[in-house]
Length: 337
Image (cartoon, rainbow, N blue to C red; front, side):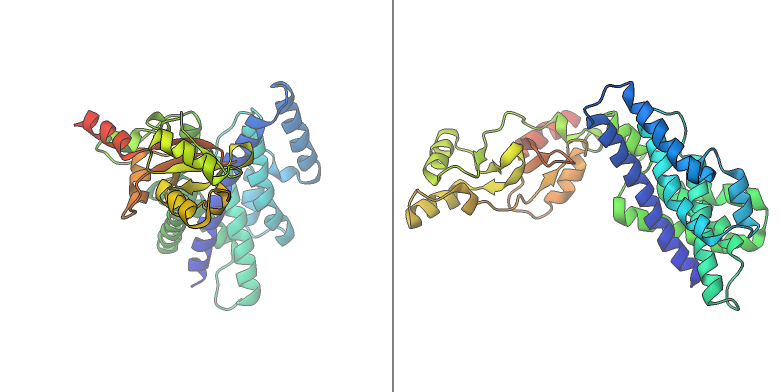
């Protein structure tokens, strides 16, 4: 029961680690700062963190060893979970060199240690020492961030050569992996890097062009749009001229507000006149995708939707980038065959 709780927490913390790195990199990319200033800001920030908590520096062997040997303070262990996530994201985003394998083990050890400390405090007669939870947590967080679950199990077993840890180790790693899959689907801490570079990849052995083609490669970026402040008469002129089945509606700064269908527009004009605003007719876009997602991902979202148009928006600010029609997807499918 206690190991189940650790597996659930490790899955969530693994997702938090991935999200933190992804978000931090985006913030540094869009920050209106000279390139040379970004590593300076990152270095100063890390220096401030390390001044008060030097354990965040480096691989952290000594700190992990102290936790495994049950020779660490609870407050320190708990703080290091979040400080290490933040410090790792900051280092890599600001241009520093480093990997994510050792930090994920460190974060897992701190998570397991803090969790085991609480479990020991509440149920001292029913639980192992918090060092055992720290050991299992190392593998669990790595499994959640990388989805290399079998690798995580083997690595931790080879580190300990303790057969008694095998069952809880396997159980916690699988639970953490499945929690991460449920939250982030096929996104891992390594695939984030590939996506940010615009590289598409497939998880299956068989290559399917739909699963490796980013939807931005097939979308139409020259889209006729309606503005939410338009009158219905102005919108009707646009729809009559273009003749599409659906039109994206945007608000300020090009942010997607939803979609408007000409049939609904015509009925509204006939019923209430043409002086109303487009904002009153906007409906939620049934299928929304981000430019780095694949065509296959968008196709799965279509499902039984009667309107198969996919609206593509920026992941962070939801600015409208383009639209993908069924014809665009069929054209790509025919290219594969």
